[in-house]
Image (tube, rainbow, N blue to C red; front, top):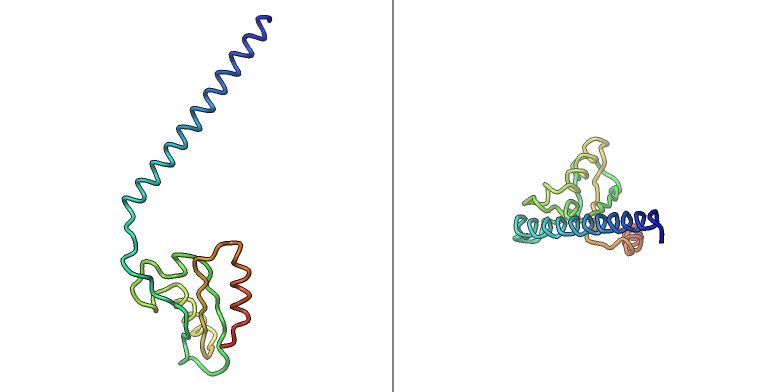
Amino acid sequence: MGDLERRLGSAAAYVGGAITAAGTLAAGIMVGQVVIARLTIPGAEAPPPRSSGLYGREYGDGAPLRLAVLGDSTAAGYGVHVDAETPGAHLALGLSARFGLGAVSVYLLSGALCTLMALRINRMIERKE
């Protein structure tokens, strides 16, 4: 084996070791962040308010506009205390006021896996309210 092959072999070993060390360090940092987040962010004290329902009836008559709110904690309203403070309720009331709609029917789709989202959206479309 020549001198060039030995140098290339040594360089490959050093590069491989550096990549392994960097990956191990990154994994350790990510695990540390998960532990810190679990210790810092408190668990939910109670279920979040549900924004599903009718909003804005006082703005006119007619069939309600149906609004699906997709998401997890934001859609469900974590961090607020009453239904009217949820993003779905704010959006429904704003649409009703701005466009003079009779009502806006909010349907909350929270916590669905991506593989099940199409099924849940189809179920929402088929709802007759």
